[in-house]
Image 1 (cartoon, helix red, strand yellow):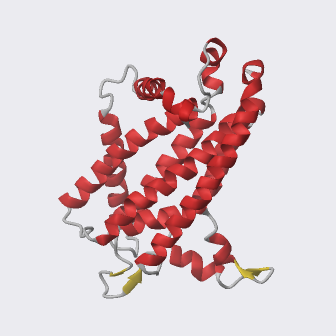
Image 2 (cartoon, rainbow, N blue to C red; image 1 turned 45 degrees about the vertical axis):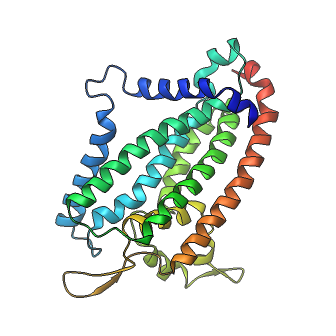
Length: 283
């Protein structure tokens, strides 16, 4: 950590480079970071809320509450996985802590994430959606849990991809499965209803399902942004939208992910440190 802190200026420069490269030769530049989530939100609201008529009121807001967390995780993890290989020229010429490269992609991802949050909350205010309350305190906790878990996965996969280039392709497939194992598009109560009927070695599948760190992070985002555990639909029917638990349970789950992810970061850094000795020869 001390070495990375000593190279913090380089880290900042690499984050700025990641952002510039993404919008190089683009007329609107950084405005795309605002326009993309705004367009997605409008499409979800129109298609899922108006045409397909989901039984979850304000489904676009529900969906986006989880999607914004997944977008930070999925897009950043894909970029971090190839960060060492795509900067092979820099690695062969200059010494610096190699961990800085995947960390720079996370920094760039957080900038986009911050802009997306601005768009989401601006739209919530514009539509007069009730999201204020103590539920918002869960948001920083969920973000911390997500970033620490993302850091652990990024360090491990960035190092593994140097030795096995199939990792950068496998991660795309893996992320597709992981997306559908996380309650973003469907309500978590639907998954519980199906999985709680089956067991593996005496353990309910719903309990195994909740071992997914991202499932816990996403329900934290949903509770923070969408807020309402139950809502009444247009037909007067009460719909259970979010994970049915107290705020204390949500906090406990976030803290659990933070502790687990911190241990994974320690482990991933050890793996990365042992692997980086041969990076220059492998690249």
